[in-house]
Image 1 (cartoon, one colour):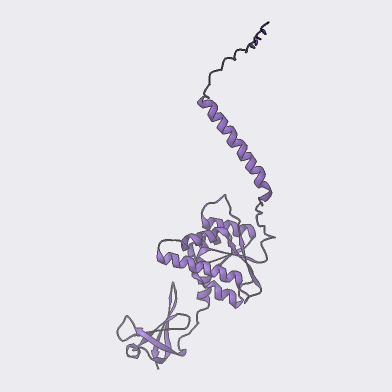
Image 2 (cartoon, helix red, strand yellow; image 1 turned 180 degrees about the vertical axis):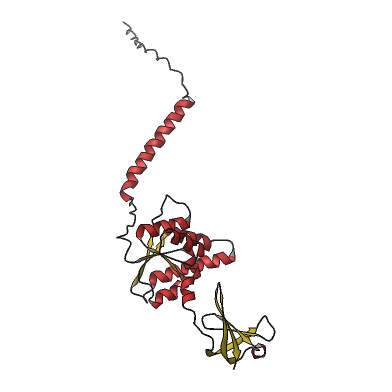
Length: 265
């Protein structure tokens, strides 16, 4: 009986593996160059994606700012007397509040000093009331973002904007008023207005006044008119707290205004 022949499987030859190249670590210079390229590409991508949403700021011109523009400074907002002036109708046109002034007021309102913080918050309250006022329909309030880059101080920016728009500058700051006038800007000073509105009395004129406290000199009493003008009353010391009828004897002019001397009738 013939035995079956055993079959021998042929083993396929496997090609030898290619030698593995050693890992080369990138150099510092290559890494830095790659990082710069990535940052540049991301920056360009950011500009492309944000460009449709960017709205360019258009500077206000003399024609676009509004009729009869009046630029306000920080001091006038802190002072607060602008509100009754606006409500009285004495101002018409466009009241312009530059953004740089609002920023300064906000910084004052965030100050650690309680007094400065209170002044800043009062100024912000004045801005809100000016924006919403309806008592004076002939005056509108406008906040503008124009910020002259050629000058750095806030006062200089106000003078520059006033000249650019041919606007008046409303302030209670004596130094700013002096500088603005020197550069040909029309200044509306609330302090000057207050002085102009004081009562004009002449020697011999009679009126009734309340003696509020004693004077510096012996036997003198002191009272005040409705506008705050001081009246020194001869022999008025004993009349403190009472209304007395007096006659003007002398008028003294001071840097702050007039001072009246009177005697009781």
